Length: 306
Image (cartoon, rainbow, N blue to C red; front, top):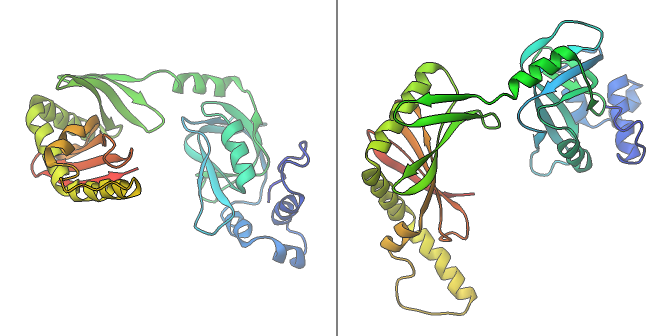
């Protein structure tokens, strides 16, 4: 499928290169039968024409996922614009450059293909036009029009929210975030970038929480302690058992649980929704405590995560 590392012999196993070429070039039926099914299946979603493209990568680098037991990653990186090398037409929007990769190739892509960058490579366009199938390793590229797009997308974006302050867009996660004072400590407030009505609703959530900090802080901590105290004591008991200690006293009280929670951020949601994220104070050996709820119903769910 892919002619990777043509100028870098040995970095990708020869067997994988053979399989990739077989899928791309459509050799004999016998050869095609030896090509992994994943390569053949992925290629069916793309048009046969190969394009030499230049593209602008987005705010995040290469990522990927794979099912349990599989050896290949489905790797991809976001693109904000792309064009054919011999065409003046620029396609702007939300696209993805995709590939199948083993561990070695996945590591290479993560380390060597930057975010917010101009790349060039051979690719095939998907039938629906939303993806490009990578046929060779991306290399640095340049085009003045793409450079102008790249410069514009890297400019900081901020918005002033009455009663909350200035929020700056974090392009990696596509949300606006600000640092605010919460009962004498600095925490992060954030809300997703979206349609104006939803952002305005999330901002109303923030103003309501900030206006009653002490009340919401106590409610959220108390709820988390009620839901997770037993689990925290199970973890503490396991730790004592490993250290060969014994004590009849409670391992962690509800008050101690609440005191050890360290609020780090609040995600503001439309229609009064919220998510509180706490450092666990080593209650769960460094995991996070996540509490969700709404202004109307109060805290509704508490989980140990991470």
